[in-house]
Image 1 (tube, one colour):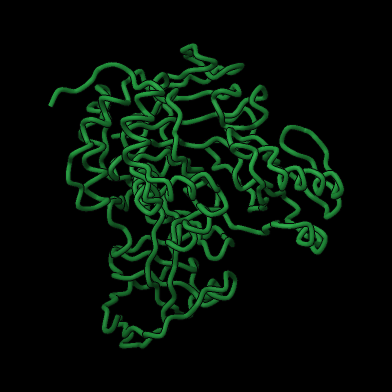
Image 2 (tube, one colour; image 1 turned 180 degrees about the vertical axis):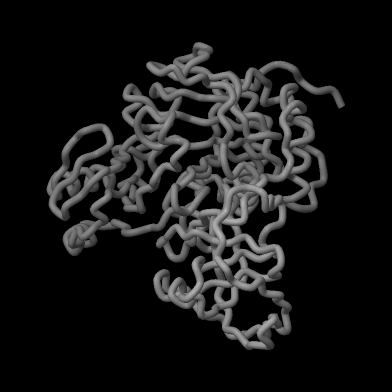
Length: 438
């Protein structure tokens, strides 16, 4: 099969892919961001928390406006191009300031919601709903390069395969919104490594992020494996054949799906200096049996020339590393001991109480130098060196020990532990953990 080399135009996108692969029902749901969020929640795909839905005047009247002090996002369900979105950076139950510096009180927000009801920001000006969701805290590496607002990562996914990606950086010109047509910066990303390449701003290629000395090339996106997997799964559950998946990286939780687009824009080709059409044609008729296979295909077919020079060997960690434990929107950082002599991760009961972790029904028999012991188990999610790990961890009395958590070798796959790197001595015996029941 011959592969097209020209860029994908709007008419070709609509006729060859949108019309053929995006059926009306999934397309209508993707156009409704509130329904998309509910779909993600049902399928247990990470997204920021839904706080409130406004679907009539009574719902506005009955709301007490007790919202997080650190801010929130108010959005129209069927908004298009970022219109109608208000992102607050603070709130005192009566008024707050948006990321663009505007101040809104409750009365003004209620008026804005009524405009949303009337379809002022929706596709085809249809009647709409409004909703409030939890505000994203940008991951620390993004704070260093962000100009204003929340950066996101747009990934085009077709037939489960991520085919093209870019980092979108909001600017004051775009009023904190990550839309290129409003003045945001689009930076191409190599799919194999997650490293940025060329960039485009207002249709012009740039080398530095505007008004900074930061080069657009060479930025390593954290959680890249997880981001590709989330994008593939989001496209699949949306039932769209071709989807633009928008992903953000929260400082405490990690990657989250923000939106799924049924008509992804085409300026991503300019940021990558590559034809989207040729990439879509290469995976259109491939049988993709699993998400893992989809990621392998993506990295194999669409790696940039420079990516072969990038070392993708496992990360090398010391014996003591910080981890961020996550549960129900709460998170806390702990110093943990990485213990290859222990099979399973173990944590102190105080950590269970601090983050309200839920005990599982099963118990596990532990064999250690001090003898056998039956322990309770919790489901634990934590970030270690940019990787999100979910596991079953045993609970023990560790208050007398220096580190409240040890991470066992079961959860250290993909890492190398170098005992010669600086570490502190805890003085505790290494546990030999064996599973007796699951």
